[in-house]
Structure formats: structure tokens, C-alpha cells
Amino acid sequence: MRRFFYGWIVLWVAALAMVGTLPGRTQGLGLITEPLLKDFGLERVAYANLNLWATLIGSLFCLGIGTLLDKLGSRAVLTALALLLGATVIAMGQSTQVALLFVFLVLIRGLGQSALSVVSLAMVGQWFTTGLEKAMATYTVVMTIGFMAAFPGVGAVIEKSGWRVAWSGIGWALVLVLAPLALLLVRRAPVEHDAQESPLPVGGATLAEALRTPAFWVMGLSSALYGLIASGIGLFNESVLKELGFAANVYHTTLAITALTGLVGNFLGGFLATKLPLNRLMAIAMLLLTVGLAALPLARSMGLVLGISVLLGVAGGFVMVLFFSFWAHAFGRAHLGKIQGAAQLLTVLASALGPVLLAEVYQRTGSYGSIFYLLAGVVGVLGGLCWTTKTAGF
Image (tube, rainbow, N blue to C red; front, top):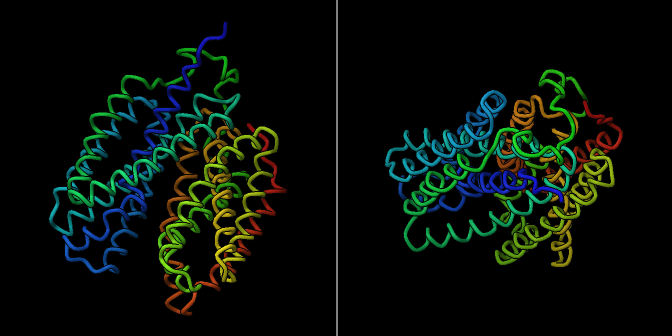
């Protein structure tokens, strides 16, 4: 009788850890933007600039965390990160000075969006080689459901008790729930339990070797460009739809459809990843994204808007599964933390620039149309490169 593979326990903890990055993500901070601006007396532009620099500085945490992860193991690093991020979120909820707010923004971006994301992704890659695509699809679905539950839950607390109470609750959850789970359940390597799911030796490329391959840059830039587009549209979605003549309630509808079709993309992407080369699947995702971007400025009917939401949701589901599974598949597990850290750095930087890029184009031209057409062209080129680039594993 086949023994239960312990990697599935690690996968669930990893997915919970990714949900724990919520306070360091743009969507999480978006939940508290309005009350925070009122509390600190900040203008929107000033707060946007604080967030931009906090994200850029915080992105540097992606690099150092990979080295720590490879040396110390995921249990020690995840436990420490959960404690540090939790303490930072609690302290931010008590802050009253803008200077301290900026320090806390840097720390939650660095510890949450950057470092904790890298550790969460690497944990699954370290445990699964055979069946990695299926594992990452499962991880993505669990994580997405977690976020879908967390956002309205945190939002309800903010409406009832204020952002400081909600932020304190998140911080204590990280300290009292995630940190103990990491300490008690996470293990460093599959060999401590069962190698049936991980029959391949722990070897592979170094970070320098990975950076010299076209596959790293083509897949990394494709994922990063999706992050740029998603963050830009996510922040200004209501404004984009208003330009096209749609009311605010359409914005809420598109959010729901994109989230649901993203789950479909997770399942479908996980299945197709077992049938197709991963670079070809990324090319398909880029094709869907290209069509959606090119059609967006032309959307004048509700049906077309909903269709574009489906395309963007499915494409995002594909990209998420691929970003989570490709690095271990292509470059092995020996230096996975460093390699995923470098890939995460690209994504964080692109996500920080997305809203700024869209806002700048809109301010200069009075429309978002030109940037969507430009991005569609760039995405199309990257899709072609994904299709032709060799991604043989080390």
C-alpha cells in the first residue's frame, strides 16, 4: 500500500503562507486605502509615491531570501518570516506618523509580497518533481480560494471596526497561526519522509547558469509582463471601464468573472501542463492575453467586456500555474530559492510599474487605449518567443 506523501501537507501550509502575504500586496493595501488616507491626512498622489518606492525597495528582499532559504531550509525561514511580518503588520496598525508608515510599507512589501511569496512557491518546488504541475495547480486553487475568503472577511472587519483593528487581526493570525504551523508541519526535504513523489536527485542549475538561459528570461518576462498588466488594470479597472461608458457595477461584475475564470484557468492549466511543453502553454496564455488587450479599447457592449474578462482570467490562471511550476521543472531544486527569488523580483518590479505606466499614459493622452495596444504587441512578441524557446531541464 502506497504511503501518504508528506509533500501535500507542506503544499497546504505553503498555500496558507501565500494568503498570508495579503497585507503586503496591492490588493490587500487597497482594502485600507481610504481610511488610511483619512487617518494620516495624505493626498492620493503622495500615497501612491510612497507605495511605489516601498514596492521597489521591498523587491530587494527577493534576492536575499533565496540564499537564506537554500541554506537554512523552509521551516526556519517561513517561521521567522511569519513572526516578522506579523509583528510589522501589528505595529503598522498602531502607527500615527507618515515617516513610520513608509518604513512599515517597505517592510510589509519586502517581507510579504517579496520574501514570503518566494518561500511559499519554493516549498512546493522543493517537494515535488514528478507531478509538479498537478501539485502547483492544486496549490493555486487552494491559494485562490483562500484569497477569495480573506478579502471579503477583512473588508467586513474594516467596515465594522476600522482598518487598525483589521490589520491587528491579520498580524496576530500570522504570529499565532502561520508561524506555529510552519514550525510544526514544514520539513526541509522530501527524503525525511518519502521520496516516491520526488525520485529525481536534488540537482540542477545555479542562479548564474539559469540567468544565462533564454528560457529564464522569456518565461520570467512573460510572467512579469502579466503582473504589470494585472496590477495596472486592477488598480484602474473602474476608470478604464468608465472611459468605455460603463458604470461602477460593471467593474464589480468583471472582478468576480475574472476571479472565477482564473480558477478555471488554474485547473485547465494544471491539466494542460501535463500534456504540453510548459513554454508552449505560456505561449497560449500570451495569445489569450494579446487578444484581450487588443479588444479592450474597442469594448462597447457588455458581452464583449465579459468575454475580455474571461480571456484575461483564463490567461492569468495559466500564468499563475506556470510561474509556480516552471522554475523547478527547468532548473532543478538545488538552488531553487535563489532562482525563484530572481524571477519574483522581475514580477514585483513589473507590478510596481504597471499602475504608474497606465496613469502616465492616461494623463498624457486622456485615454488608456494606446497603452493597451502597445502592451498587446509586446505580449504577442513574447508569446512567439515562448513558443520557440527551448526549455530543457538541467
